[in-house]
Figure 1 (cartoon, rainbow, N blue to C red):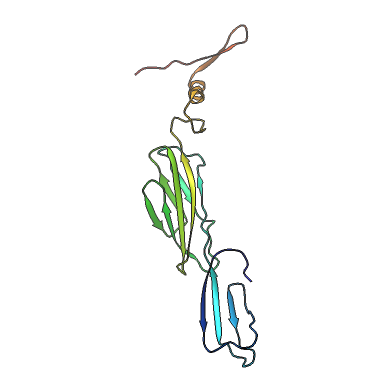
Figure 2: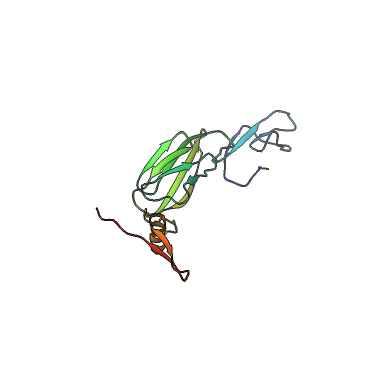
Length: 178
């Protein structure tokens, strides 16, 4: 009867007693029941699907103090339009906006459970959560670990590579004190 499996908000209004057969008219979200004997509609109900909350973010591996763009444009409401996007960034900050794009910066590395709650014009809502890993700024290769590979990236970028007579490659990096 419905186009997809999800939660539906159903309301029913009826008067009299339904006798005879009941038939569905219209699309998946609206039905009208008629008393076949009398030919008049004595009961009807409509069902509206809850909206669907969904977001993506970029960059995919953000670092602390780096602005993250959260995009909820993929969220939808088949029974109306989304009126509110409420973001819980997992760091104590919560904000509600009317546009699907939000921006946020986490000051510390860590795991943040970001939650989006969308509400449509029928006051129906849906919630979507995703864990965002915010990396340390010194994690240059963004593998969620600050280690020797990150130092190597700096050394290669600012150092000098020399080849010896036997083909061995040496990386020379001199740190300058100020």
